[in-house]
Image 1 (cartoon, rainbow, N blue to C red):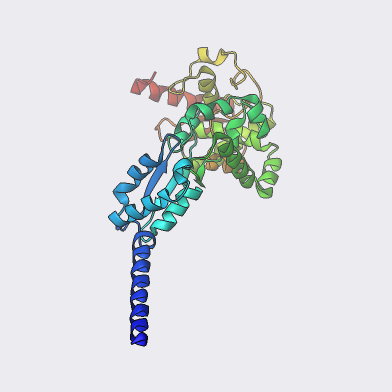
Image 2: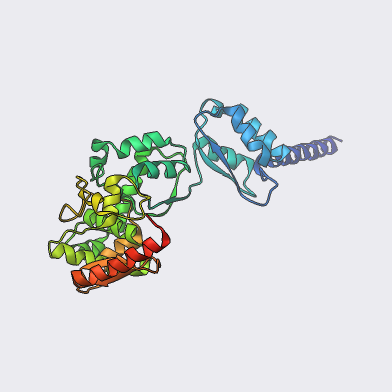
Length: 341
């Protein structure tokens, strides 16, 4: 009888263990969500444990939410909520989701750094995708000391950015973001590109400055090496670049469709009609196509260019000033015919 009782006890205990393990698995180690796609929960500095649970609830199963709340009650997470972007993936257990959020193990996302004209626009565009405030980033980009730590100044800091898509954390600080951009900048400027810059007689910052002008001249990437060759010829011959986009930058009027002679007298270091050589820094964040165009220019003997009268976005090139005047006259006539002022 004792053996039978002992056997029944063992069986009962075993059943209890199995039930307990089943409950543990069901509430803590089964999938937190029943959905078949990945969703993301964004936790910012204003969130507390109640708002965290509220943000999780739309993606959770009932047992997943119960398990998560239980883990919260038996931990210090409620007092140490960590900001970040967290993935709620199909099949991710409640325990692992809790562990990720408790330890700040985020999921990075693809941030596209754009080719924009101003640092204010850069700050606004980038921070619209991030937790940071655009004002905080803009302050750093206009702070001489902060820029110098990165190897630039407030006139050249646009050269820091290499437009591309990067994996980055949503709650990255402005300082860490700029440090990351510096690493990407240094990675872009590898030995091969540095040697090409030396071959055309420019520093990386000067390459970015010239590339920014070329980007403003045309959106046609195929033509950019041709334009680069023309401007490099002018630099070598000590001719003013006479680039219309630099006048627009000096006037702070990027919407101008025509540049008149009266505008060419503006007293600004960015006015390449009055000043020989490159302006103090980029007039926008140069595109990769623009940068590589300067590093791989088409070799020719053209010294002038003018937008084509067909408004194709490409240019007529000329070797002599008289040829250029003919091209300019045709373009001016086309502008007048369209009523463009």
